[in-house]
Length: 567
Image (cartoon, rainbow, N blue to C red; front, side):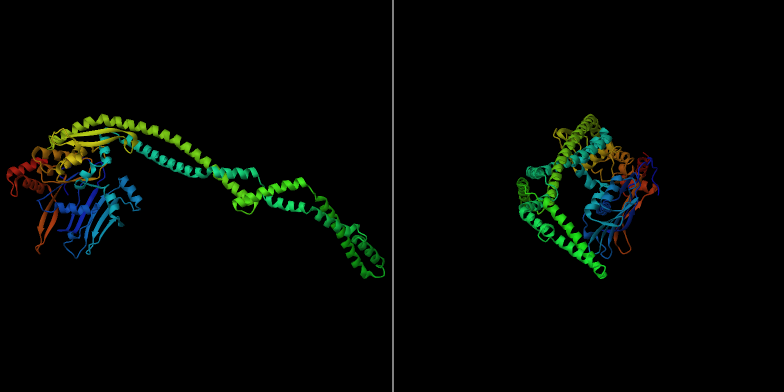
């Protein structure tokens, strides 16, 4: 396929590689493979150029209309192949939507015979919202884009920063701004948590102090209760211990003495009755055990202390303990200790939260200082670049048939840094030297809008990342020198971006590096269908000559066509 003497060195990745349309309106089956520079599309009015754009708009996320199914027995398919190997933003969006990333991304839209529409990206079904978000990074269709872009802050700031050379500063500012917003949101969340906790903090601190002052040890309340009961029954305990010990050792007939006497009697018959020896030994063992029991009773008796002061202290501790157990609705000392630990942890968390807030506030102050400095530097470069840009774009507008139009960029300073800095930016237009400037999207007609966008993009092409650009009849309402200048701007813009331009002007068509001709064809069954042909060199000269001189061009028209292409 010939590319008509391509003059420009391609230093970028092609975007749209192939567009296939099947069974859409009067299109049976056609395929377009544009090159990476300026692709011009020509053809008679009504040949189907707008139908091709309509099919392409399905890829861009437009709603499907079942009326396009002329052949009701087959589904409609529109498929576009894009080389996205060098498109980081697109790759990130695919990742966010959990879609496989391939070097060549295939986007397909289908309308079934029943009228049901489906969309696919790399064979993964997607919603129209996702489809629109993805394809907006790949195709800029001026029909849709022109007015919308000039209403969006992002595009206007991108334009101004492109001409100001703010790319690096904008990246740094965006990183800093996002960090500032993230930390500011984090600080706000922490302050909300602190405010919520503060409502109960005083009461929790009171409870913690109460438990801390009580200073209970593990099982202390239970142990004190048991000890107090013992002290309260000390006399009874001493009496029982003494009586038991007396029965064993100090009564009229102590059991230990009786056992010892029994042992002596049995021992006296051991020689005559050996079988009595084991019994005698058992009695001696019992005697030894009871002597030990008597000693233990004496030890226990010595431990019993009737101490009124100690009893009072124990009662006071028990009263404090029972009061706290009831207050916290728990059963044991250990339960109270767990509550104390939980309260202490919570109060420490409050202190830690306060420390985090202080640290974040210091970090925010530092980031804010950096943010203001970056914003100030960006603003200064914008202010410096705007006058020169206004002059250049106004000169271009005069060349493309808008000699009375004047563009002005109005900037104002914000009190606080925003997403794009400390400025507001508005692209304003006075279309007729009225002295009255309005936003471009309000002041310009559709044709003027296209040319304004072309002029702006041609001046910012080197610095701005843009997808495949499609201009639909950007040259409407102009001819002669203005049309030639439009062609030159398109050709210059195409050195940086892939362009597809539908045109009726020979001066524009001649600037293309690949030329597609759209025409109607009548089949054997009398059906009219739209076809597209990639023109070779001779065919292209003839097509442009017909645009100049009609269906039967003169030799002069043919010569003129050759000169336009050669130029």
